[in-house]
Image 1: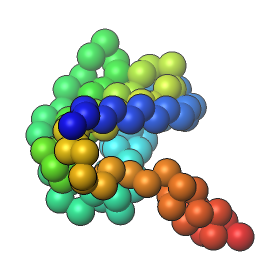
Image 2: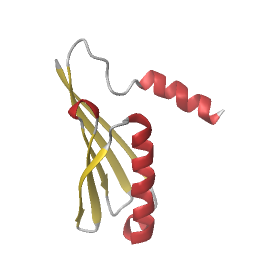
Image 3: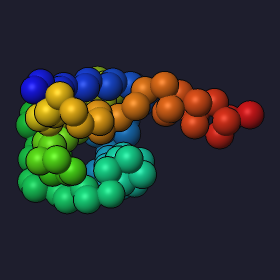
Image 4: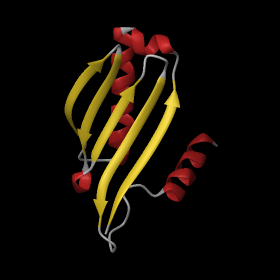
Length: 105
């Protein structure tokens, strides 16, 4: 049994975080991508912290997914869940890499 934590990060222009409409569109886009991977994604709460944002979701296997947008334009996505030894991981990075590669060709 293991607690799995996956941290992903990427950047956007800082204006996307500061502008309310752009930030809303960004959060919708991130949620749509997450729903491609986590079919039971449900929003829990959302907060603003010193001009940045934080959105918490629950997902399969009792996972907790945190999306944080910093005013400098950094976005982090943290996925945490408990996995029994015999269970498959929620994310298969090799399969995902293959899917992304095929999608871009």
